[in-house]
Length: 161
Image (cartoon, rainbow, N blue to C red; front, side, top):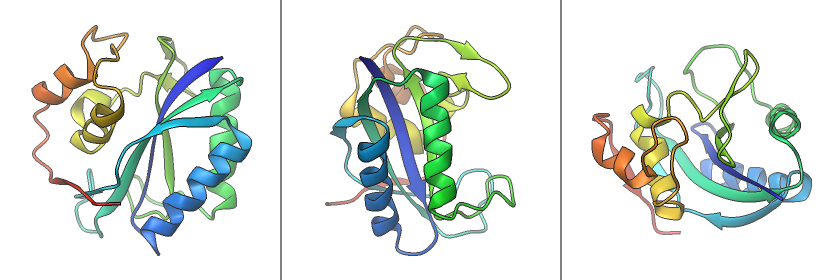
């Protein structure tokens, strides 16, 4: 069984409902959601002229290898109406694979661990909630340590579920 850490998020439409739908599809098609963080409201990263995001970290157990899991996640995004029109632009759903087992994958189609993870508070905060002691296989530091060292100044607020 493989262990994957995902970040789901979106800032268009009913953000809470979009994440709920994504979780359902992930559980039905990708694997069992073992842990999930609270929802977090986060300032937009990269392009600040847009609404704030809701984000949530998930830990899943899956029988799929990393590349097949990525394909399933991209299909879920497409079926949910994800439009890739602007880099860092508004979107109803985004599903990122942050970590997969302790694998290091560097291809044009997939990079694991997610290359921007150490620099993004909006990903580290929810991931720290469910996996503080997991070791980043490239940085060789815990997620909790990466969060403490993160210089990202953007706001992240934990929401009550």
